[in-house]
Length: 422
Image (cartoon, rainbow, N blue to C red; front, side, top):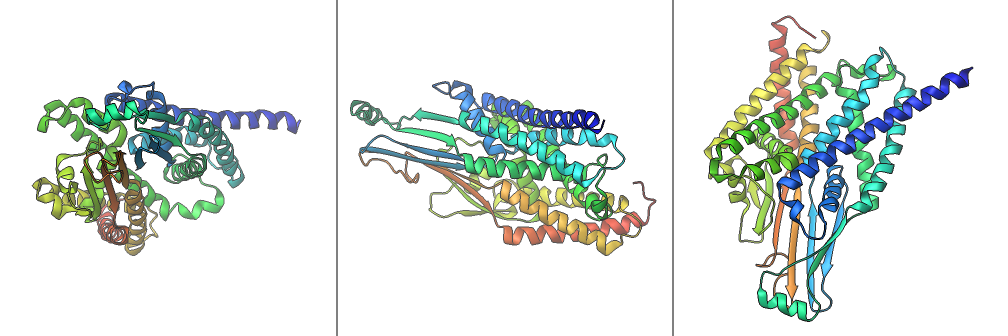
């Protein structure tokens, strides 16, 4: 009799896991395809659109793509890219989390064993999906060096430069699994509908409210970025093309929105743009990063203000957002959580958020070509290009923690003056 009840339950668990994986992958494929189509990737030669979409999905979950190329002994090419298309990643995370949490929302309690089982079944099917997607993320492009004589010589000697990319299994499987586990754990932690196992109930009054408001702040910044993008696309401000703007929305909106969040807190990134890299970015940002030297330049409020004085609104926006987060966090915390604990909880949450933002907004991309010794394969010459962006985490994380502590304390004090509504 127990077998009869256990079998349908196990089947239902696997069907729930399958729904999570299919919904998450489908959402990322759709968002990636729309963004790449708007960016003009559908015009790539050699039916490259599908492999590029697959590679974008791989990078969205933290996977890696290897780039290589060359043209025999008389030509060589070098390229590499490390970035996370956060619009694709965020879409997949939100859909995956929503579908995973939905069956749990109908329960008043859940056990640790059941939760682990749901994690495990979803992870198994997720790994299968990654194994199927990875080989699709592979293609080779033939590249023009931008000089008709060199192109003719390369064709004559059968040495036309090419660059290919392919997703790597170890990194894609490893980081892809880590991405899923973080998304599922965060979904259970921040969801107001999903019950926690008994052994984790101590997180309810402490870290759960802080995690919720922190995620809300990041999503709010993304929503503000979306509104700004719509306004820019509709008005054509700065000669912006609507297609390019929405390509950024579908591929890298959180990359820019969360960068603005970190800059508003006072964090600094180091980076540079050299040559011609087809990664769209705001004019002020490109102006700061574009340099003819070999070193990186600092990207912060001070350097950006030289090109756009409106960046000084970012600290004001950050202050309002964190103060609201501190107030909401305190109002949703149990009465026993005092001002100092509220400050500590939000400080820790903001430190983790800044660490994640700093890592996820890092960019490194370069390409270079050399034919008959002409050109620079290191991407510092006219036939190459490079863009890099890296956060100073050792200073950014403590700054974010400080902001969180102040906002948590003030928010707790303000909340004590008004009735709580949890």
